[in-house]
Structure formats: C-alpha cells, structure tokens
Length: 153
Image (cartoon, rainbow, N blue to C red; front, side):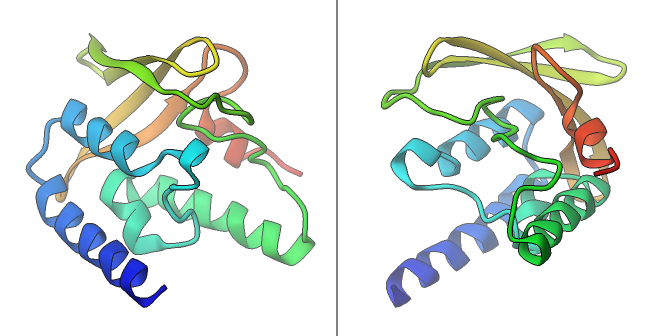
C-alpha cells in the first residue's frame, strides 16, 4: 500500500509538471491512461491536487463539492456516472481511443472510443495559467458535467 501511495504521488507530481505544457489531446490521453475504472484504477475524485492536473479550478471545486455531499449523505448526490465515459458500467476492454478537435472557439475536443459500445465524449477546454484544462464534459445524452454538478439536489 505504501508503494502504491508513493507511485500515485509521483504520478501526480510528474503529471502536474508535464500537464502545463501539454496540448488538450495529450492531456486527455494522460487522463484516460490514469483513469481506467474497469481495472480498478481511477483518479481520486476527492483529491484536489490530482483533479487540478486535468480540470479547471472551478470544475475541480464542483467535483469536490459533490464528493463532500456523497460523504455527508452516504449516498450519490448529483454525479451518478463516470463523466469521462458517460457510463455507470464498463466493459473489460477499452479500444480505439482517438481525439479530434471539433471547434476552436470554444476549444472542443471529442474523445471517441469503444468500451461497451462506441462512445463519443466532448471536452470543453479552457486555457489557464497552468495550461489547458478541462472546463466541462458533454455526453451524447443529457446535461453536461457542469450542469449536473450545479443542479439542485
């Protein structure tokens, strides 16, 4: 367990150093490399430092607020699925991850992949002083991540 903690800390530190210089596509690739819930390997949605590697400060605050709500209520709050996969369930394979810019203003990058089926997730990016960060996530159906996290319970 200690070794795993050290490895995670190193990934966060190295990830934050590299993330500021990454393109949005490279940032997404690093996110999907670290966040693979079907392998019981995922980012820690309660860790501000880790979330800040990929998300804007505002979106990080919203995610952390939802996590705090879960702890206090001992049940799900606004977020009921994994925002990077727009799903609650995952297949055992993850294939054909590809990224394409679909808009420049605002900067939108579509991630497409096959997990249980073909999925397309749109990421809204914002340039920050730390580099590109994810400011919202749009799934094919339903409201965006930001809209979900700002909805009243």
